[in-house]
Image 1 (spheres, rainbow, N blue to C red):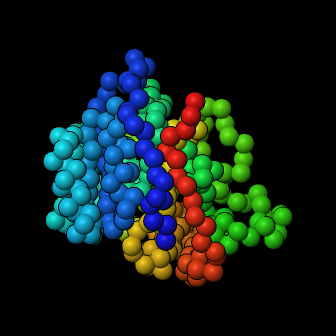
Image 2: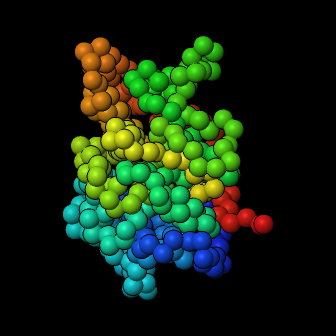
Length: 321
């Protein structure tokens, strides 16, 4: 697992607010579960953004030390609302609890190990204005080395494309490369574009958008709930948008939870998703036949990760002009 890099630097001060930034109240929702050392500086990066009017933190199972940090941080900033006592109810249900408690007209969901870069939230909230309901806008997710992270913008996720992408089989069968759902190797668009799926690491919705699709499906415990949310937005006639200038640095794999357990939930989430969206007997059959393969592919990933050499990374959340 990646711990917080020792040379982490955050912006010394928040960027000044511009007249172009929306006046709407913005609530950022973060669900926390044993995040590790990244948690406090990640939350600080949110609070340093001038358009944040509220930060709702849902404690789904923080460590004792993290709880102390959360209470200390909450005591220093009256924009923070801390929800705790419900135990680990899963990400989807925790995010819904946070959204229900939030008071903002715009809801921004951010992972607890994601570092908001200057201007990210302004880009997201500006781009959602005047869009049809429902709408969801995701940001450009970056690795600590500032390369684009896999999963930030994705195509249509089906049982077949999931198997191709999980196994990265396009590298071995050129004809299958067109089924790769991850789009980070494609040219970066100049502006906001519609895509089938964005990452749940950092995205925003207006409250009426979130309510229009009944929030997250709480049948997902961890992972794939963001894929499901994007699908339901599109099914409802809305838009899923990707904003290339709304940047967030996402560490990933910081949770102290077992990687095998995390991947199991991801596999079960994919199985649920494909069964849920199957609309014909053929699609239902494909979902059932490919489900064991999808589950095995997700469980194999932690074993492959353990064989890779660990490379130190340097995270820069700010960069010179």
